[in-house]
Length: 119
Image (cartoon, rainbow, N blue to C red; front, top):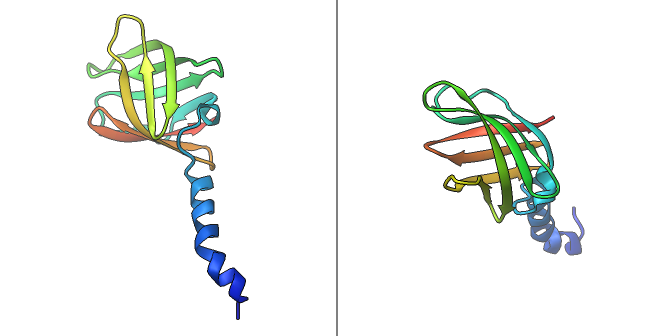
């Protein structure tokens, strides 16, 4: 039978564990190279690969709605549960994003959801 002190603290321990598993809002977590895995079959626009640098720059390759690939460069911000990609002369793209300590990031926007895996 668990000790009474542990029973009272169990909800706190579970909450802390969940925060570690889904750690939103810290840009340093996403620094590195990411690739779509699996490739989303149901999206017209999706990120194929992306590199996020610690200085806030990003570069990515995306599949566009016309089936072509496009190179993207600019600045990114990951705060709360939002990933914002800003490029000169283009509207900001905002994605709902959750980073998992397993090395996966789930992003949603532009009519769908995809998973990126850290390389």
